[in-house]
Length: 411
Image (cartoon, rainbow, N blue to C red):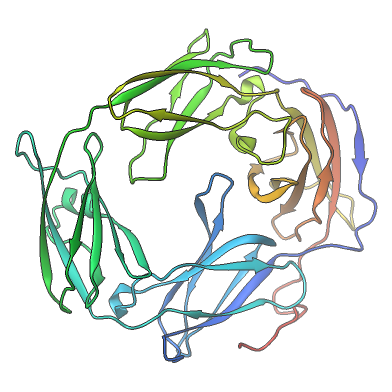
């Protein structure tokens, strides 16, 4: 990785810390379809990420009254809350969108876990249609009404567990069985009785696999060497592909791809490119997310992956607002100023330059252990390879037990 000497081209010192934010919290109760509280229900909070996925943001288990609280949640509007417990025969319901504020009372919510359903189980026997050999590395997606889940059948078969996971009973099931290198197979199953184990027998036909070849270039169409390319199939079908790296001439090849659409993500921080801002919307100065279709007839698609302009560098320094002492072990979150669901967080062991997009406006939040999250700071578009310094004072978080957080009763 090339060394990046850092010189200060501009400095922004934030003098006012009177207006500040803090970590938020979520408080609520989980109930069934009749409104009765459900104790012992695992509750999970997920953050919707810039690429359409999710990452865990907190979790807990409801107490004897069905109540729960999740603390230390960064403010944001891009969270989803879910609760399920197969042991209590409450399968996963659709997640509930949640917004979290950084000041004032906790966000309160009543989560409806739905109707208690007696659980059933599925047992799978999947064969290769050409060789009649068993296929164990399978992924199964099952739906029943509003319930939907990816079932870890392949992992269970590899572990020697012949009977698969629980599914709702008394409801018709639609399942789709997939495996890498095979066409998917869809089945509709009639309602299963509570406690029943239903065997599912299916055959999968081998697919004609294709590939994507190409070259990675910058905004001047000059080749960029050693870039990592990650192909994400859309919509997600339970399979994943290992990233590849471009050679010294910027050329790459992704092999053994199932037919379908793929989004190509890229990263090469040594050359000034980060996947952090790949696909940001309403930012015409950035490179675009490239979608490539691998045809069902096989063969290779050749593409030019234009990664857009190189990024800029933001040197983030956080100080204690009272003592002016410099802080270490920071977390810097960068978000698209046009869409705060797009972005990501960089943990820093010490103050150092952070790669940020050029030709695009963005906002950042900074926090450190024991300190409140900073107010969002908007950065106007920088030019490629520009260096800018940002000094941010942070306020300490209240000491536990000082009762400074406002609270509100459960709904």
